[in-house]
Every structure is written in structure tokens, then in C-alpha cells.
Image (tube, rainbow, N blue to C red; front, side, top):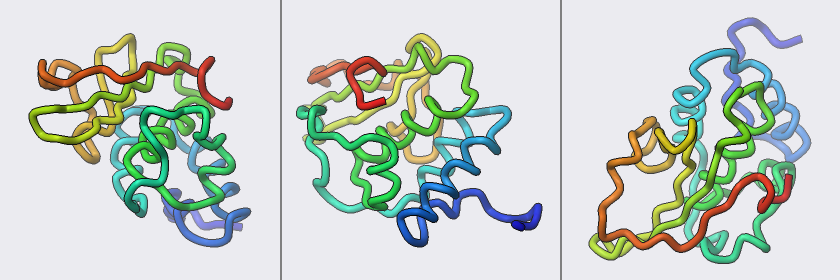
Length: 152
């Protein structure tokens, strides 16, 4: 039995089966401030370069494959945040939208999770919930995905 002080962000470590079980415990542990918890905790995930293509969501893994695999890039982190909120008791889960932008000014992709009817976004500034007005006007929208478009 885990102690009350067990850190629920341990789902990033261990064998695939253990990561999935710990992620489940983590999702059930979140009871308030869902966006803040998810933004902060996913900021600690191990990140690699170029695992998932931002413009090819057909090849994105389902939640259990993503978490079990334990490898995340910027797209994978945004997708992991989406899955975490979707499978928790987050009451706005049906309003979530993943959007990918190409920020021409800074020459980078922005893989963002829009929440609460587009008012807030995650994965823009690591570990923070940000108002969606922060996106540069020069950023070009590449794709928009909802739960219907992702392997739920």
C-alpha cells in the first residue's frame, strides 16, 4: 500500500505497466485545479526530440501506448495532457481542443491544449496555464483536433 505522501507524478518512471497504473492513480488523485496540476506535473516529463509529427495525428498513439512507452516530445506532452484531463473527472473535457501552430516568427511548432472553451491553454509556457491571447498573430494554425479526432 502506498503512503499518503506518495508522489503521484511517479508515472514517468518504471516499467510500462507500472507507469500506466501510476498514471491512473494520478488521474484519480486530481480533484481540483485540474489545469494547474496537469500543467505543473507534465512539465516534469522526460522530453526527447521529434517523436510525433504535429501535422500527422493518424500516427499518434492512444493514451496507454503513450504512457506505457514513456517517451514524449512536445506533441506527446500536449497529447499526454489531453489524455490526462480527458480520463480524469475534469468537467470541461468535452471542450478541449489540441491545436498545432507554426510560429513563423520564432521558427517553431506550438502544440497547445486549449481548455475551457478556448480561454486557457497548456504547453505554451512550460508548467503554466496561459491565456490564449498569448499566441503571436503571425502563428499559422496547422490542425485542430478534438476527442473525436484522437484515439480515445
